[in-house]
Amino acid sequence: MTEDELKIIIADILKQIAPDTDPAKLLPDDNIREKLEIDSFDALQFIVALDEKLGVETPEQDYGKITTLNTLVSYIMDKKKAISK
Amino acid sequence: MIEFRMPSLGADMEAGTLCEWLVKPGDTVKRGDIVATVDTQKGLIDIEVFEEGRIEKLLISEDEKVPVGSLMALIDDGKGTPVSATVLIPVTTETITPAVEKKIETELPHRIKASPLAKKIAEENGVDISTVTGTGEEGAITKEDVLKVVAERTSPPEEKKGASSESIRMAVAAAMSKSNREIPHYYLETEVDMTKALAWLTAANLQRSVKERLLPVVLYMKATAKALAETPDLNGHWVNAFLAKKEINMGFVVSLRTGGVMIPAIHDVGAKTIDEIMASLNDVIPRARALKLRSSDLSETTITITSLGEGSVETVYGVIYPPQVAIVGFGSISEQPWAENGMLDVRPVLNITLSADHRATDGATGSRFLMALKNHLQKPELL
Image (cartoon, rainbow over all chains, first blue to last red; front, top):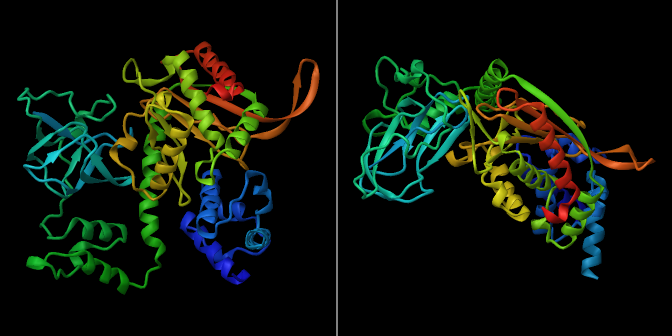
């Protein structure tokens, strides 16, 4: 999976969780939760969806590593690499 | 015979419009079955029955707007018992004021044939239904006819959203105005060191799959239920006098991105485990956001909690949702200087507030409740 494909999947998940927002307007370094006004409950739904759609399980202590699109994408790419090894 | 009535889905609801019957005379129904959809200010709500039986007669027709408590149908429960006025009103004990007893006139001067869905879509989009040309049976206006008119207009698509969020705004406004007018609130506040509770939660979540993870709010809810068991005077309704309720049906404030709030209830929180409470939240929050609630989600609430979650302000003072007598507010956990045993430390601190009805309780009861809640949050392993 390329980074661009991954970004499309992430945008899809965000759109499902926060249908009234426009994830396409997110800048790479925007704080996703602040920008889209995602509360604790929706944030957990997002983590669940990442697990279901991408097979990436994010432990709670890593929540701080996935706050922006940039950091989220590199976190998932790293995890995917680790899984395929 | 059982009387099936228009349920009250909150203090702000005076009437509802029957959109569709999902049953017909002769059908057998059991507890929990959805028998009708009703249009309210909070969107289309699925209405459930709470008894078993056979539908004897449907007494109101689709598109009819009737006050809360109006007889909608008769259900034969096979017992042949005389009709009782108390059965099957999944309602707060709130009385209906005589002013709304009268059927509310909503019909246009001449009747226009249109499906309920078509009318609903037309209303949401501000389309005058009398200007739509019907292509259905006997010229009835169908959903497609209305959608065609909507599509033909050049107006921005935001309009649809505006209409429904506007009605939710009005529902919140009505309930909160009533609360502020009638309920003499008093407010208490306390701070809780959440070190133990958060450590317990982290350990608990390590044992769980992503799907089963818990949020701090489930601890708040369970601890609130336990504290209420010790101070039952805060769990119930005020209708000319305090009516205590046995079951703790906790309303949970869900804020909508488009504005306004929905307050679905988690039933019998006292009897649920924290995993069951989390499962209930997972079920009801997405439905509340999508405005797809059932009548049981919105009735019989005995107390409300509002939790702002992380990244918000530290303190929230709630406004009581009548006819309840208390609302508990949980702010965002933040690191604060904390003095204990003559030492100063930095701890994760949660501010909890109680807004309570002074007609029902006094500050002493409120204080006992908050202290009990605080103690329960210090022993998360026992929740």
